[in-house]
Length: 234
Image (cartoon, rainbow, N blue to C red; front, top):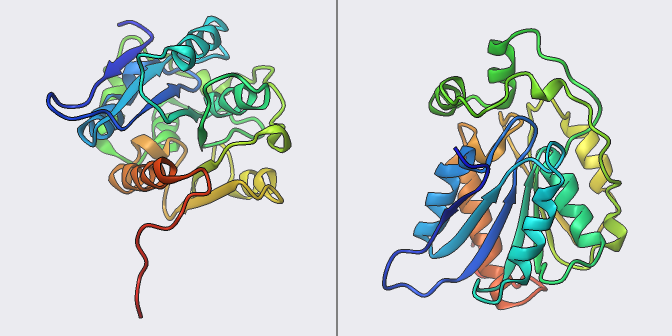
């Protein structure tokens, strides 16, 4: 399977924007098929790439997609695990075309799985996604034990809106560490998923995660100030 995958809006609908996904350790773009199909159904184009920490060429590919005028804006970088650090790096470097960031399972510290079963459970509580990873010949088991040299977060240099998604039960990257990294950055809006594990986009709450992303995108389409679209009444 190729490291990158694409999903487009249904025929007859105008595309509402483009998401460029940077995968995490052990993953390839196809791992995000369910997320890509769901966002494409809502008329967002999705381009899912590989893990930049394993293949630096992914960053060049992401930059080309951001510069591709045939892809509709707003253009949003989505990074999961190590991909989140690289997505933030591209934005901090003022890479042209970045309109917003979505950072998922921001990595912090080191974690070593005791077995494949323990890695599965740490990644996701969704049995469907666990089965997919188990049967995926291109997924690299044990990659979460790798501790690659990652770029600094430098959120102070990021001038676009940031949506941060994190599982409350993430044992790979504890929630407290992620919240500490985001603290003090006014452009970052953090959403925590109760019971969520490391890969929020492919976890048991993947529908809620996708809905959270769509709401963020719809607000972004109105303005970078993210005006409120819907409010609850008492």
